[in-house]
Image 1 (spheres, rainbow, N blue to C red):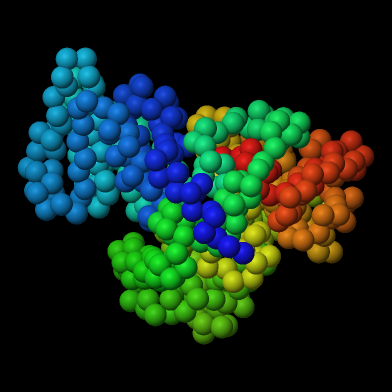
Image 2: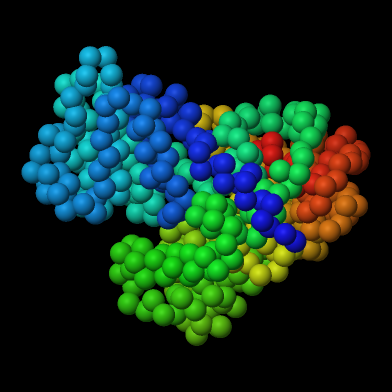
Length: 420
């Protein structure tokens, strides 16, 4: 497959706004609330913040790694806030400020003593995500957003449809995809969703970037987060993760492979989840007879590291659906979560989007099979969903009926273009 043709369409992303730019402005900054933006390392948080800064006449960007900023923040955090010019509200971006041991107290003090309106944007990765739990001192003063790497839709455009609008447009086939969308999916499958390798589209550079990112996550972020001394074994565990993508995840099996206890593996997995290295999807069990209760499925944020193409495709779909769930939740559309369905007889639907506690959209993934999966006959009658979606790798569009449920079998490039 020639990838040189993909470059022009994908590189245009670097000049466009990210999908979160508009809701950050509308929901948080318009009311002068602090906006917290967390996400994986190197997913574009700093770039997004600087893009928002360029739209202001008055603003300030500060990174905790700057020695001068740390000293000034320790002396008097409020002194760093720029003065407004006439009616122009300044925007202050604080990058990695959560590395300060007393960051929430100091930030609350700055916010509560503002003499004039000032917008504040705080960005960070793992530790910001962890520290925001239990942030009672900032209650009512902030909104949190999760920035994901790129998706099929965001490669082409920054706007995101609401959940109902997206689902209705999808099943009405409100627009058809062209070669550019197929090229975007191919690029994501080859280079992964993170901006640097996706925009460069160079295989050797992508390998070097991936190796460097894994070392940073384990050797720096994990060390700072956990203070674990045995990082070598965790590196061994990360090397084993790609082959376990999409399968039922067994803690005991991995514990035997690494010769450690199950509680140790569980603790290590929790760290990797906090660091945006993996994410786990749990089974949905409510009103599903003989469903699995505990075993989850694990996926990688950087799915380009998955070698098997079918597994990588499933991981790509999982990342897209999780991104939509997080976006819709963070922008006030409801409480969205991602699960999967599986019975003890091994009948399975790969994903289930749950909205406000109720099943909303089941999604099956088949890399090459365009015929409806046999599992639809098992699950469609017992789910309260009137629609189901089956994604395949190549272009396809066909609807089927299973009782009252309409199941759409569609090519992933076209269908995922309706999600975030």
